[in-house]
Image 1 (tube, rainbow over the protein chains, first blue to last red):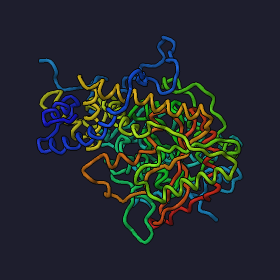
Image 2 (image 1 turned 180 degrees about the vertical axis):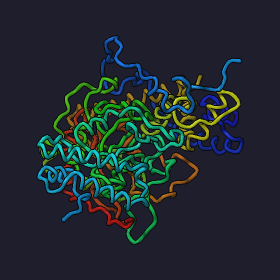
Image 3 (image 1 turned 90 degrees about the horizontal axis):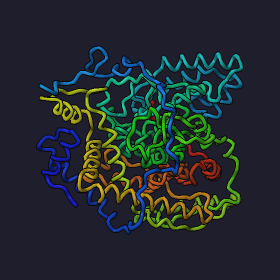
Image 4 (image 1 turned 90 degrees about the vertical axis):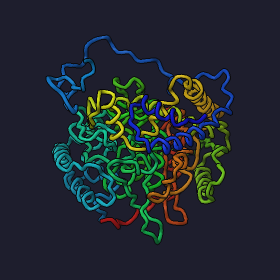
Length: 95
Length: 493
């Protein structure tokens, strides 16, 4: 499979990465080189094989359902580009 | 007398204990060496004030007879580990200015045990690369050069800053991470030792995520023993990482003297790849001979799905990366570039903040996870991962204790030499290491000799899950037989 110019633009939008017009063609070439490289996986017989979901066979760990952390809003927003009263500020979403 | 920064970590530990020198003296020796080595660009940030403050605490502890296991030993931290109050970048512009309010589990355990932080080490952006050339903070230059040449070489990647700093005596040891070979390949390129432990051995909490089902932390150091000492402090259960295993941490340092008598070492025939340089083949044969002479049985094995590991990796890792890196959106940390609306702000921030290789991998990951392609790419790759793991399980079930392979298909290459248009050429660096991540196994790279141009080459040993001890024993056997590589003279100082 390979991607065309339109698909490159669609993927870029899904990935929320602005791509300049002159970068579309080089990106298309690079993505197609990678897709051509992974093409060989089509030759493997995977009938009846379970996909790996856990690298190490282990039971999902669960902790007790209690509050064990919190009350640190100012730590959490400390690195944000724009904040007000411990809220993250973003451009207006709803008119 | 050996300069303090040229001691091994074990020698420094013993010297501090015997009060031959102080923690402040050895910290200062390293800080001076870092100052003189700016040309290598191994550190993104040095933290001299913190280093001296920590060293003073160590000196007090030693004076009171309360020395902890790593008391006063100066280390470098790969800049993928969150360090409280210290700029943490992942080698990316998108995290510009980020100062975490928390400490990664692995680094916290090193400080708990008395180690001293020298600073944050350079890396490929978000650990995506094999040469350290994708860092937004500039390339790291290897302390190694080809004989009779001053062309700058890469230290490997992504833990290139860690490997270069260890090889250039800018720290006694360093933390690193390995998603497809990022500990073992730079260790091989710089004549140092690096171990990627079993998936789950070290907590990933506080390590900036690349591909969560593959990422694992480990040390790079100048000897097998030094790596064993460091891993002992880095490993251990952490309830904050659900994939961290609740197993006791063995005495890794004690394992180095076990030897290999009675062990069976496998040589996978599929690793004899086309076009492998004769020097690498010779080194591999030599490594097998050393293990045989030390009492191991060596026999050929088959890992039939080997060739599919790298292409499957280039589906699984970008897919996980596209999800993990969605958090860099200009809202919670780092860079923000305005746009006409909120989507425009996301798109502009990510376009300006991510480098080319990172964008490429995010986009591949987005594509293989998108509607209509998920089964054909992602699910198929995860099935192939099951087959790769089964290959190893079959080998171990047949009585193999560890597997010996070359660490890399070549010695270090020059800066810019791999800048071809096809990104796949660079990916081939990980052809021998990536299978280990796909199967979650431990792997160690140990220096075994030099090539005709005087550059170091490494051998890799792959172990059973949670049997790093056998790897340390076998790697020590190779280190003993090969002799320690003499590291380059400081041309940069």
